[in-house]
Length: 174
Image (cartoon, rainbow, N blue to C red):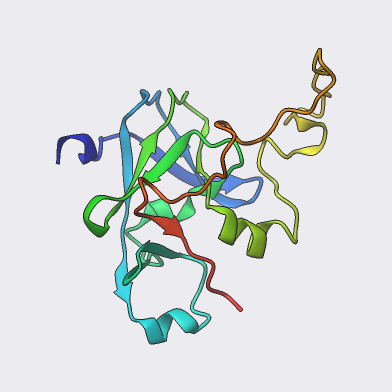
């Protein structure tokens, strides 16, 4: 399991700009496995019920309901410029650091297009990247030299929380 051994990082669930969030209490190195998204498997019938927002689709036939007290990863918020990815070998979901994360920084990952379009976009994204003026402190970002807007897609392709083609936050509420 090497790569997916969850590190013993000190994390804290506390209030963030979008509700509860998970914050690093210590520096976390790039590539570290921060947490596992855990929960009980739900049936196809249960998926249709409006049971909550903690469903995580890990394969065509498997969905995890992360709304259990032991699952602190359920409080990890969406960001359009995340510092983590959700990776899912063998129907499991692990939160992996995309880059070094500083103590005090909120842990985030991209929930994917389907969830974003259905739940976040209608209310407006509140992540740091989408904050008014593009800055958490309200200061405007400097204009780009070529006058063109920068895409929020890091590789020019569509982004998804689907980790290595395995895991994705599922939009299930009606």
